[in-house]
Amino acid sequence: MTLKSVPTRGRTLDYAALVYDTFEPVLLLGKQAEYDRKIVSVLALSGVSRVLDLGCGTGVLTRTIADKVKTGGEAVGIDAAARMIQVARKKRTADNCRFEVMAAESLSFEDASFDAVVSSLFFHHVPLDLKEKALTESFRVLRPGGRLVIADMHIPTTWMGALVSHVSRWFFMQPQIGENIRGVLPGIIKKAGFVAPEIVATYFGYISLFNTWKPDA
Image (tube, rainbow, N blue to C red; front, side, top):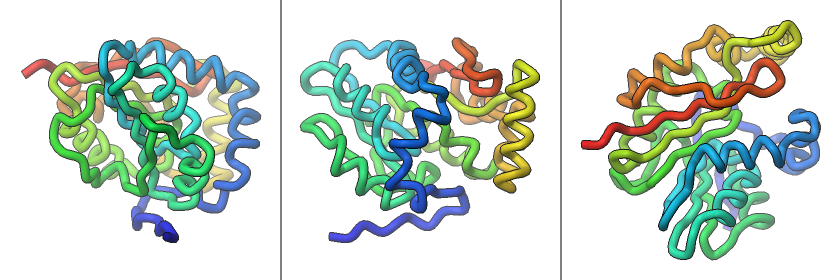
């Protein structure tokens, strides 16, 4: 069955699906494995964990998480780009790892059905209102006490990070990047109901790793 991309006003990367696994490690300057390991460590997976990966692309991080969760746990990756999901299903599906075509701002999962939600380099592809909707949906599907971990573009911390961020914003004509580098993420994360996020790591002078959680009921 041919998968169809989900309509969304966010940018999808269908066109890059076949080369994404080649270029992502280059864009992360050879630090993809280290970067993914750090994200997984911040997730602090324990017991039987069910984790949702927003904007999973070809599923590298999703599968890394699946390999860490204990028996009975599951990692679910979603992306609005059908070609990304096709690649992810072909290369990274496992008994406890699956992928669905779905927009982050309109999740079909039940309330409180995940122990953690994670996202890597997704939020700079979507406009502010969809960022907010995706975070509201993340809050809804998380159980009380569940963790949210986001790695994405944020206020640059070095001159090189500032250069890369601003050039990317104008070269790719993405005002969504401009939103991120103005520092909108912490405020809208808190607005969605989460505890004020902590920055636990930074990469390349423009990517911040945020850690927060849904308050206990």
